[in-house]
Amino acid sequence: MVPPHRGTPGGGYLKLERRVGDFATVGVAVAVDTTDGTVARAGIALTGVGGSTIACTEAAQALTGEPLTAQTIELAADLAAQAARPRTDHRGSAEYKRHMVRTFVTRILSRTGPAAQEQAAGGQAGPGPAAERAA
Image (cartoon, rainbow, N blue to C red; front, top):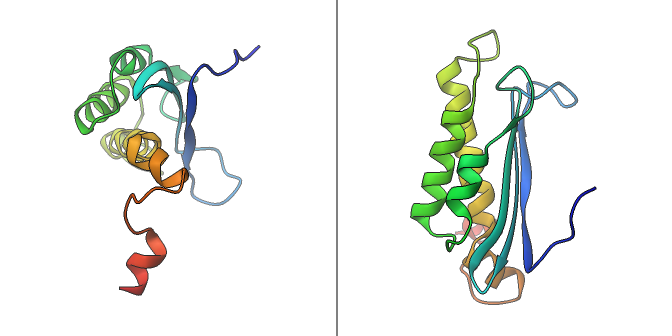
């Protein structure tokens, strides 16, 4: 059973695949609950970069009790990449797959942070991708 959210839920899932429907070369799932700008609970899991799904408990613990800042996001991304156990194969080198874990954790958490929540609530968090394309 998945426990109910406490606070403001956030997170996401990103998957690197060769073709739509393929098994993940790298998959990253992140779930966080924030209360008053601080992470109350966090979970990070990886697929495709080990013999089975990897729970990144150390990375999640690094977020818990902290605000989502550039520093805490970078620390969690680095710890998640260290937890990965990828193998070099025809889909990429082990280092490339670790890099993608780091990139995906950073992207998901950056979308979950205070600026992203403000934008979702209708605040002024800056231009979106459409505005950037038009510029």
